[in-house]
Image 1 (cartoon, rainbow, N blue to C red):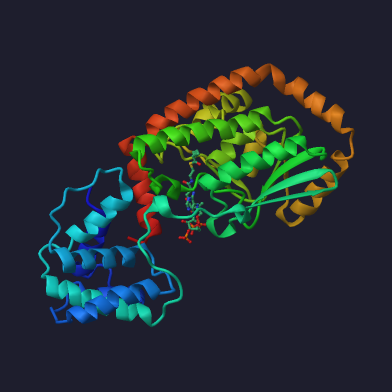
Image 2: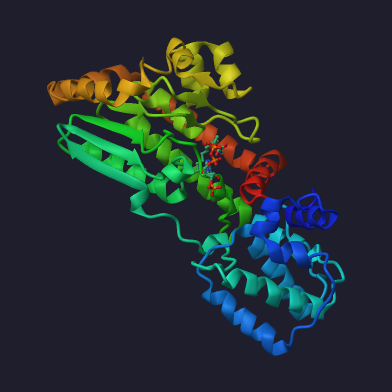
Length: 396
Ligand SMILES: CCCCC/C=C/CC(=O)SCCNC(=O)CCNC(=O)[C@H](O)C(C)(C)COP(=O)(O)OP(=O)(O)OC[C@H]1O[C@@H](n2cnc3c(N)ncnc32)[C@H](O)[C@@H]1OP(=O)(O)O
């Protein structure tokens, strides 16, 4: 697979990316990747390496990779270190960027680095270090908001700018929130999203956060986390309601089979593009979906990634009721407030009567799905899909 940074550099040199927009955004890259070699003193270079630490505006992965590559070329010359493993996304992207500079002379690299930093300094507002993913801080508890009112505990996914994609931290926080909600004095628990999306599923940048034990360890710990996460839904003791305020993707769809009620706006869609991502179903959907909609409709969703409208999902039994978007919030909350006034113990016991017969089976299915996914995450198919998403995201 050609490196993303290498592909970017080649495209730039061929002029294929020289649209006015890109020239405006990255003038230094545009000018100097193919431009004439010029001189910058060692002192200028040292100043620039210090200046880089003071930049306030994040210029994005593309420029960070370029800075990294130019620095290495300027200080060490052409790349002749071994290529990192294909699953070592971050180091491989860095290696590709450096390697793409070929035999560019050290002096030219030094000049280009100085010039690139100067162009960035003008509009800088936040840090620009090429931070290894493992060192990156995950969003904290503000990515999840928990409120309790009128007998209802509401857990709200709160990363609207990322379509409420689930970070590793959020999986942990949701488990804690469910544990607390299961014990508090509310009658009903609700999961919903803030913004135009319900949830875009697993945050695909989770895959770049490789621990010291490497990708195998990442896959192993991911499978454990997934299993624990889904177990919390299987075991949740009270009525659990999904208020699906917009499109839902991936794991946010599959776990709906473990909710007691699913209310959706007519703007919602339900998408499980697992094959496209080289992955396989989780959240017990390999069991709950065929059971609720029949194996053929389940296959369309889980194997072929067919996206359902809210009404289709309702017909298939995945959604309880669909509401017009304009009245969705009002109608749903009036309904839930009325339900929350029913005797809580009776509701809890009735839920358990309905669900308990399946619990053991669901735990076994969850364990099996998590194991299979652990292997999938190590596959070329999955790795290529994640690299493709990250490349588009980094606009490489
Ligand atoms: C413990 C581990 C358990 C793992 C369990 C496994 C679960 C499997 C899954 O959940 S598979 C599903 C994974 N999700 C996806 O594949 C969705 C990816 N995202 C998209 O396809 C699109 O972003 C979209 C269709 C959801 C929305 O498209 P739209 O064009 O409307 O918006 P943007 O693409 O511009 O998105 C806005 C910003 O949000 C970022 N983002 C959205 N979804 C994710 C995601 N899943 N992971 C990471 N980031 C996501 C997107 O990159 C934009 O960010 P930016 O503004 O910084 O560019």
